Each structure stands twice: as structure tokens, then as C-alpha cells.
Amino acid sequence: SQTIHQWPATLVQPVGSPLSLECTVEGTSNPNLYWYRQAAGRGLQLLFYSIGIDQISSEVPQNLSASRPQDRQFILSSKKLLLSDSGFYLCAWRRLPWANEKLFFGSGTQLSVL
Amino acid sequence: GENVEQHPSTLSVQEGDSAVIKCTYSDSASNYFPWYKQELGKRPQLIIDIRSNVGEKKDQRIAVTLNKTAKHFSLHITETQPEDSAVYFCAASIMSGGGADGLTFGKGTHLIIQP
Image (cartoon, rainbow over all chains, first blue to last red; front, side):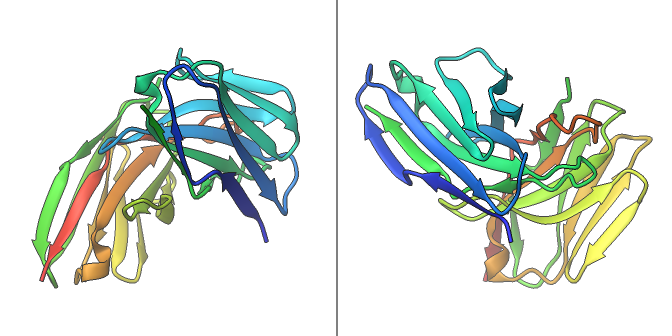
């Protein structure tokens, strides 16, 4: 069966510090991978998606970047965090072929920028 | 791009009563509509989904209806129980060949089941 791992679960970082959140998927190959952000009490905003290694698309302009160095690894990064980067970050995957549209989420990272 | 509106933002019902959450979408090409349930501090989990070739789908106490003409879909929960309390998100996407499209989510509905 497929599983998705995301870490860390909680992170407190000062403004201006770097960020690296990691997500890996097991039990499948060539998944579509996604990063979503959820601000407190708000909906899920798609930040990045990837259909393959080194293939990243950004949905919104922001202070963050994403990379996919391996097929089942997706990394969310920032060189300098802003207060507005605080939120609940969720990695997600969807299996190819594209006929299966179900999206599965990781357990999330609660990021607090102080 | 797709825009999904979800109402209400908060819904409080008595235990045992029914709850209905409604969503509208803007892109007529959208053809996949999942619903997610998110408990406090946890990941959203898929509870039911519907594709545009179906008007209604039911799974025990949960049902979803889709009106393609009006571009709206709804989640129905009958005989609500305390464990139904959570935030519910609707979403829409286009099932494309590349499969790259992420889901567009509504802003969520906080469902509160009163004992």
C-alpha cells in the first residue's frame, strides 16, 4: 500500500531563517506531488505541484520554492522566512495514471514564524 | 482558473439531525468533486467523491449530489453524530491527461454537532 511521510510535524522558526520541509511517498512510482498551505481557519491553497523529477509548477508568487530531486521526494524551502509564512503545510500525492483522481495528504507541518 | 465557493462557513446542528453543505464552482470543464473531512490539527481525509457523469452518490450516512447545469454540488450527512464534528472541504478539478492539476478547494465549513 502507499504511504506518505511528511516532517517535521511542528516547527518554530524566527523571521529571516531558512526553511526545509520534506515529504516522501512510498509504494508508488511517478506520483504527482503537491504542496498546500492552510492558514488558520482558512481553506487549502495550492502552492506547488510536480509531475516528475525537477518538474515544478508554482501556483502563486511567494517567498517559497519547491524541489523534487527524486521521484518520490518533494521539498518545500525558503531562504528567509516571513511572518506571513506561518501556517499548516500539507504535502499530498496523486497516483498516475490520471484516471485515479484521489488526492492523499501527509500529516502536515505546523509552521510558526516568530 | 477554477473558483470554488462553499457555504456556510459554520454549521451547527443537533445530534441526529441532518447537515447540508453546499458548493459552487466556476469552470464548467471541472469533472471531479471530492469532499474532505479535517479534524483539528490533522490531515484532510477523503470521505466521498463524485464524477460529473453521476448525479448522486451515497455511502452510508453521507451523500453527495451534483448539478452540472447549475454548477453546484452538495454534501448531505444524515443522523449526525458527535464524531461528525470537523471542518469539511469541497473541491473541484479537471481530470486532464497530464493529471497535473491540483484540486481547487472551498474555504471549508466548520460543522458542529450539538449534543
